[in-house]
Image 1 (cartoon, one colour):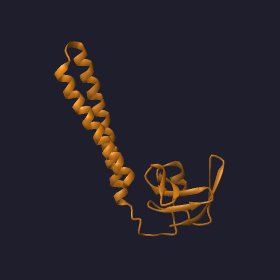
Image 2: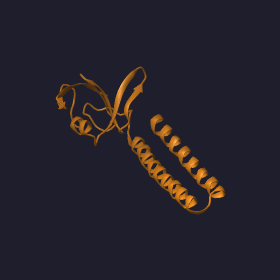
Image 3: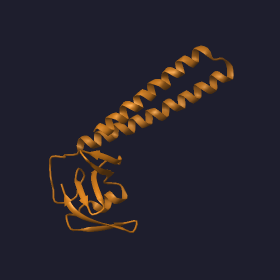
Image 4: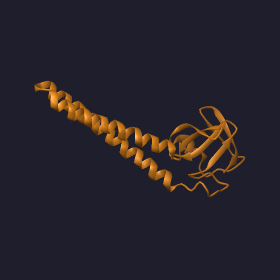
Length: 138
């Protein structure tokens, strides 16, 4: 959630800065330069708005996870220890730090997430010629 909240805050800040720049430029520009700059600012605002909407979707996805519920079978919300790294089946956030450990946060829609879903300790998958044996599912 910290990753998602930081992302939302960063996008909201960029959105605010783009809006402020658009307003400031309106006051000091004229002619074609004004129209070009205004369009560029509008595109930036639109891009940031889309990113904000996607980040809020990530927050909704994270809120649906139940990290307190455990299962021997990999499902969304599972923490999976493998012979080649640990995975948190949640959102695609890449490498994150949980305590002292580094873990890959992956969506259950990602290629490796899809392969891990439904498996349990002792089972193996192969991705890009690399074998992952599941050591535990939390």
